[in-house]
Image 1 (cartoon, rainbow, N blue to C red):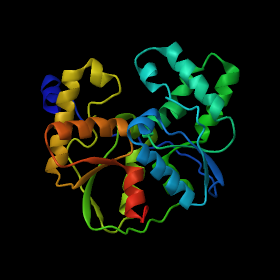
Image 2: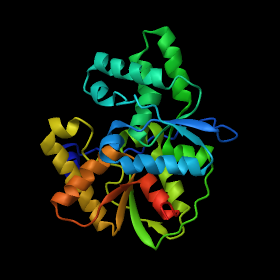
Image 3: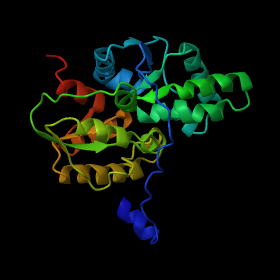
Length: 274
């Protein structure tokens, strides 16, 4: 897919994501947090949600999971259904009205909450104030573990090579590729291998993979080929939409390589479940 793009646009270059916006982190980790589980984690990767809870609880933090939560509204928002996205977002706002941090095991969903809710409610001053307050206390899971909890991970697994994949919006908006790299670097027996096409989309893109199936298929073919050629034993990602797409393609190709959520991987590598 990338070759087609570069042939069509001869002067096209890969653009690195912008540097992270400076963020003031709390001096100490909080006693309580909310967890926004995301709809994809809830339906397809519940073990990743449980691993996120276990990682936070191990840090001495009480985790609150409001049962009424659903989608963050991103699929409707990126498809142009602004009013429907606003309705979904409004329902989520009501569930996280306390002042605890909101931890999200998905960079793309965290980015929606932190970066795009303000656009949805720009014409509602009272709600906008609430949205802006929520944005300031919204953290992607890896970011929260690294910069707020300041975790020091002890690797208890066998030597393994992994490739890290970060979703496009997570990379742009939450810079989770940096947080994920830093956490994996703490694991003594884990070697993170570089792979070609690392910064490129896997082709999922929410509804994009349905509306533009042929293009999406070409993109995930590029991605999975690069992952296999990297020599990685496992693929690690903090976004389950990407994992659905990548794992589905690998399974269709009858490849043994599979992707796992970062939370599940960290929990397992550090003795979780023993």
